[in-house]
Image 1 (cartoon, helix red, strand yellow):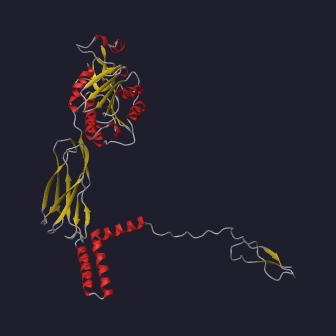
Image 2 (cartoon, helix red, strand yellow; image 1 turned 90 degrees about the vertical axis):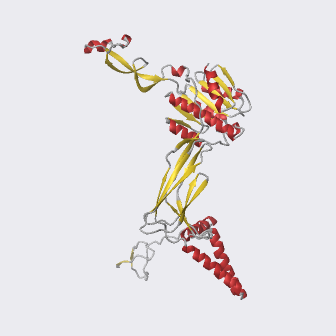
Image 3 (cartoon, one colour; image 1 turned 120 degrees about the vertical axis):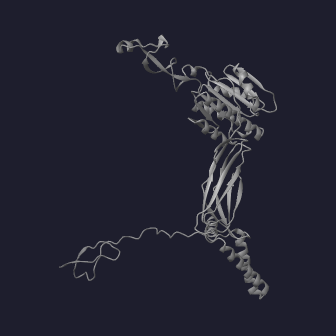
Length: 442
């Protein structure tokens, strides 16, 4: 009896040593892996989606510089050519060939790229509504030879300024100024400047970007407010500033005594240790942490003008707070912003718009939850919320917080009513705000 090692089978199963006997006349292999119970079917290729076809057509149009009207003329020409061939109608063939030739010639207008150097400048990026704002665009021939005429389109907000560029010499330059609309509070996006190459019939067109876009913030109109807003319990100590004072509540350092210093501030232990009179120096403090909240609920306002007046009221309080160096938080129905500079706060007010799915009570809740240390809370809303409901909502802010409720209502006269820590102001217009603030501080 001999021992024979069989080669591995084709499917990769391991070989076994088997004995060769009289009864064994064929080679015996080891166990073969059983076929799986279920075979994976190949993934089916679905039909192309309409979005994929549309994206492919858009990429092809951009590559060829063909517009929709150009595709229509090209397709019409092909249809006329086939119809003339099928009907043996010479006139249809001629019209088809002419349409196709017109489309192909129009593509020649999109070849190449103008040799331009474009500079876009806007001196004032932050302006108040109604003030004049301008910009300037400079186009210079960056090539070594005379360039052909072209057109530059410059988007300015919802409008587009079209600048016709004549044929410029090798060192030619064109300066063009433009006016930025500031008739309403908004954020106006200027640019990007782009050149448009195409045929006179509008069949083709290719755009080339030359500059980035610039945002111009049109701030709301504001009025100067009299007096100084002060709070209650939270303002007993105040907050420190960078100014040093000889008498305040926030200790800063020790310094040598000079004639005229208050003797009550002499630090006797340090004076005994150094041998010279040492007095305490303090950091000057300011009072009142203010939260200014603007209601963005669409159902709170009777119209767009009423909402714009409400934004202007909030902006007026923002400006007064920064003039008095008070820490300010700007709140809306959906978010709250802290640590803003005066410019950034006004930029935020330039962006705000009315919202559909929100309510004025959400404004009280977000101030309560995220600005609980505010000494003064100014709530600005429209004419539709009732004063009694606003007073009930003001109880969410606590008795130690001074609350100023301002309802902008052009249909009613000015009224100021203070009950406990809540002052309700019925404001007919923005111009009446200084008088209303004087009466609330009286």
